[in-house]
Image 1 (cartoon, rainbow, N blue to C red):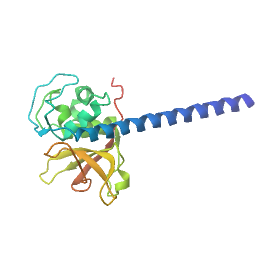
Image 2 (cartoon, rainbow, N blue to C red; image 1 turned 60 degrees about the vertical axis):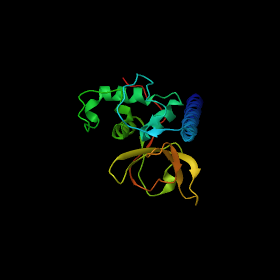
Image 3 (cartoon, one colour; image 1 turned 120 degrees about the horizontal axis):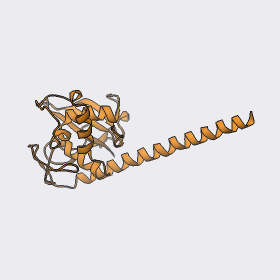
Image 4 (cartoon, rainbow, N blue to C red; image 1 turned 180 degrees about the vertical axis):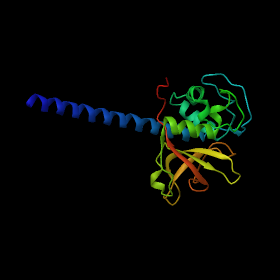
Length: 204
């Protein structure tokens, strides 16, 4: 009986230690993502979402060009996470689960990962889909938020660890047309998605 209790205690301690280490690792990823996003605001980028052929994997358009999705893609690249590859692997295996907005009949590594609707599907499948609320406390540094702009275009940005002037809202790093910016815009447009993504899972 004592042996069984000892084994249960050891298992309990090992299990909880694993959870603590996993939490620390996840928090480190989000912290690094925030730092990478803030670093993006120091770069000159001309807003340009035109179709370009790029290499695969780790392909990118000119560093002087980009759109909102490129802020997210380039920030994760600083962490060694290649969303071009991860999105492609998932679309390749689950093509019909992704939007058919563009009339594609097969995956396209040049552009799939640079489209907000595709990222929303990917993040909901391989990250955490979080509640969309009006409570700013629900949006943590490292979270990804998507919006529908006034012109009905989709948009995406990264929540960071800096606050609005009144301290009530976390700021967002995003590119809405003038290059990567740090702005108080969390509730400026209709939020369509709220996600947390720590990195790739093994896709069979």
